[in-house]
Length: 200
Image 1 (cartoon, rainbow, N blue to C red):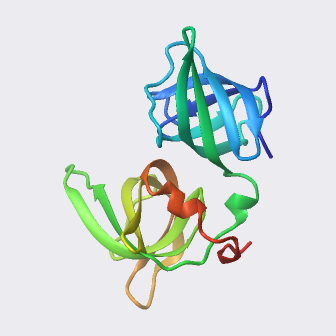
Image 2: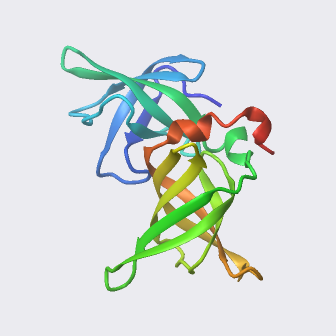
């Protein structure tokens, strides 16, 4: 699966949100790199930003990528992306069974911030399955921090997309499925997990 030259796409900082998004056209592809020309005013981007890329031709063709360079060609903003990881192909199906310590923050009905702790069960570029100390509601947004060790962390916003049946475990945790909506930092730790760690 890959994007094709001249293909129309939508790039966004937050997955599936119009705010902070822009249409673009693919002007170059090379292995796990992509070059885009943003349409209209585009986005304010800098090196290291994480972008969600979605094809307008095939809505199931989606990926995350990191901004490597932003330049202007006249009044057109050219964005070079690297570390492209598609969500709906082998990378999404590939789940790395990895137990990592995590913290999660979310808002309750009164807009109070609730802090909880837990542990990942498995993860991929599109999301993770985790066991948390407190239950979460379906479709709620959660600020997640995963600790890979050696001061390496992944910081992201995720959406609760599944509450696992019998989610309360004997060890006293609630199992949920989370889909990444926005990466803040640490995406490189996720994509550089050694390939032998990934289990199909």
